[in-house]
Length: 138
Image (cartoon, rainbow, N blue to C red):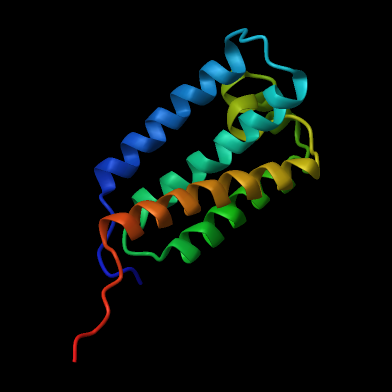
């Protein structure tokens, strides 16, 4: 457990901001190299998953939040290996492609780990700055 719960509205705002950045990243021609476009979007998506987990469970530790976010990202990636006509039809839509992706790639696991780790590290650095460790007096 954390010593103080997270701010649910702040984490929801972070989630919305990451969704907006991700949509621009994937849908607006920014002239990015293909590698940056593909894996940068996956990194942003995984950071958004972390921020949604933080918003939904504000009392969880950073480690617990990162673990659950990693499991969600892993599950979504593995779901790409499952094929049903209705699911494949949804994957061909823009919302389906953005939420579930279309093609399985083990390299996405690296991007997800980087995105979740970056989000967790940012939270840890901010929490450390806002609530610095105090030596017990005595």
